[in-house]
Image 1 (cartoon, rainbow, N blue to C red):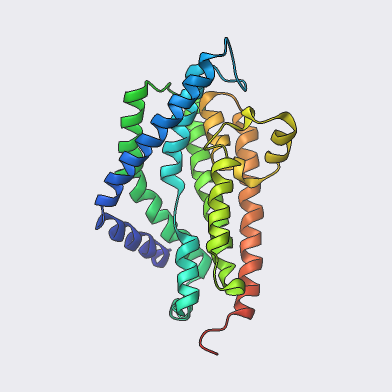
Image 2 (cartoon, rainbow, N blue to C red):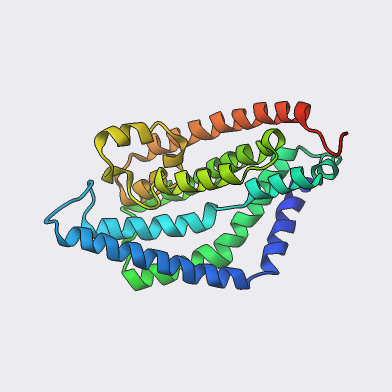
Length: 261
């Protein structure tokens, strides 16, 4: 455990050395929320009640919490692993007496802690004050939301590990990275609550892991989703993706070739 904690601390220190980019990130996320808040207000201006099961204030809270949550769980493991494979640096990493996927999970955890402290919390306070975001539906929803956020991070990280490991088979994963990012935002509920989609689309989207990253935590926050059922679905997706990562990594070790080695 000490070895993996070292990976997390190293990532924490690396990101703290470049704090200025998080300042720009806070400004960018505030702009994103402002744009979507304006869109949602326009939608509800022509409506007399709920849209997709959400009142106007709930929809505004949804978009604010969704974007703030996104600032926490996002990491660059897919890009980092791809670069290690392409440059051949992965050989040096494999010589270490640690499990590679677990070490990358530790790196992502270090990044998440850094983001929480110098990105997510400041961005959240700015957005919540500026737009009068509603608090969690109740104390139980608040605790469920925090647990759900941890599971959302774990699921997102497993997806990123899968994309990164794919570099062993495809060498370049820029297309996969862009597709993954687009699906996380659209199918995960960042850009639009999933309940805004047609019923047939909702049924399909709830069968995918993306909804467990953003929609589930925010729906629990708003009291629109059962806490136990939401957490159970997230836990199931994490376990399935973790198994898939392990299977993919085993195949990757067989296929991995660096400089003809």
